Image 1: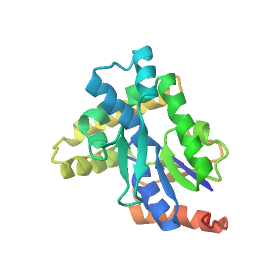
Image 2: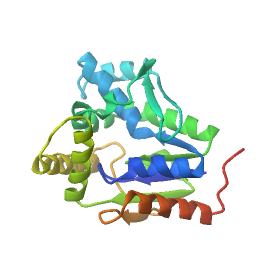
Image 3: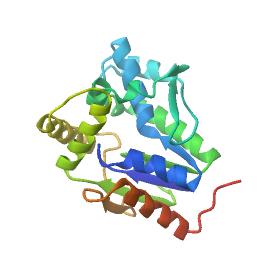
Amino acid sequence: MIIAIDGPAGSGKSTTAKLAAQRLGVVHLDTGAMYRAITLKSLREGIRADDTLSLEKLVARTKIAFSGSPPGMRVWMDGEDITDAVRSDEVTKHVSDYCAPRVVRRAMVGQQRALARATDVVCEGRDIGTVVFPDADLKFFIVASVEERARRRQKDFEKMGVRKGLEELCDEIAERDRKDSTRRNSPLRKADDAEEIDTTEMTIEEQVGHIVDRARARGYAPRP
C-alpha cells in the first residue's frame, strides 16, 4: 500500500506521516528530506539552483539513504548522518529553489518509486499524489493557516536554539507557498482524488488517527 500525503510547508504532513507509518508498521519515505539533502550539499559546494549542469552532476554522485524507523529514523548522505543538518534554517530557506529543477526532481522521483516498489510506504511532499505516485492507494492533502504554520515552525526552530519572529516566519512561509505553487516542474497542488484535511485546529494525534483509520477501513495489513 502507498499512502501519499501532500501539502504546503508547516502543515504537519511530515510529523503525521512519520507517526502514521509507525502506527501502521510500514516505512516512512521522507521525500522532503531527500530534497533537503540535495539542497544541503549544493549549498556546501557553492552550486546555484540555476546551474543545471552542476546540479545534474551533483545528484548523480549523491547517495541518500534512511536507517531505523519512526520516531528514530535517520537520514544519510554519502555516509554522513545529516538528520539534523537538513532541518537547519539555511536549508529551509533555499530548499524550494533546489527542488524545482527538472534534473533534481527526475532523479529523486526515480529513487522514491524504486523504494516504494519494495515495501509499503507512507510518504509526504508536494507532488506525491499528483506526480510521484498518481496511483497511490490513499491520498491526503493537508493544509493549515499561514499563522498556525508559522507558530509550528517557530517551535521547531526554538528546539534547535534558533529564534525567529512570527511575522518573519509568516512572510517566509507565504513566499515558500508562492514558489512551490507556481514552479514549472511538479507544482504544489491537490490531486483530484485526494482528501483535504485542514489541520489548523487539529492535534497531531487527531491527524494521525484520521489517516490510520482510513487505511484500516481499506482493510490494510502490512506486507509480511
